Image 1 (cartoon, rainbow, N blue to C red):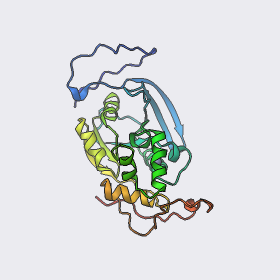
Image 2 (cartoon, helix red, strand yellow):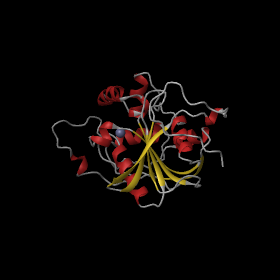
Image 3 (cartoon, rainbow, N blue to C red):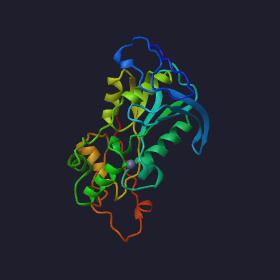
Image 4 (cartoon, rainbow, N blue to C red):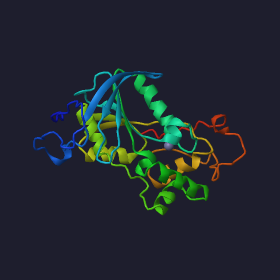
Length: 255
Ligand SMILES: [Zn+2]
């Protein structure tokens, strides 16, 4: 086991970080644990672990169940904040479904972690995400839209997530994901990924195009077929049929 990053709660913000021992670059601390509190949820009881803002000013949160320190193959979901999906229930993406499916699954386990990363829009920010949606309404897919705005299709960096895990004493995970980049990203930052658990969410006519693009263009392990006709333009004036009509398509490949 790697030594656990020394992270102490602090009560006042300080621009000068704590004196650090020389550590390998991969272990350099970029986030600091600040406070822990119990968090009962609809999916079970967790601990909310708050971290000080990272270099970009984002305040990330770890939702921890049970004892995870030093455990091998801790169940882990890394979730990127999605205001429109997580909070507003947007059907343009699968974020809310993935978040709730993950919390439900973790709530059934004796231990596990969900990292809630405040990196809206896969790292491009809320305003740019809405600009990307506007481009998608004109017929571009999610990847093209990001490129037109001058971003990659996924701007996320897993250094902060890996550092949060180290702060929690987690060095080895079983990752709940369909995204191969998350596995590579964690491994790049010295977190052992012992396996993957697919996250299966429903497909609806509003998110089918987005999911197809994630599958075809970003290499996500999904099996979205032409069972659902993507709506290139969310039709104004129709009722938000998505909730009623989603067709449960297995969005996960076995392996
Ligand atoms: Zn989303």
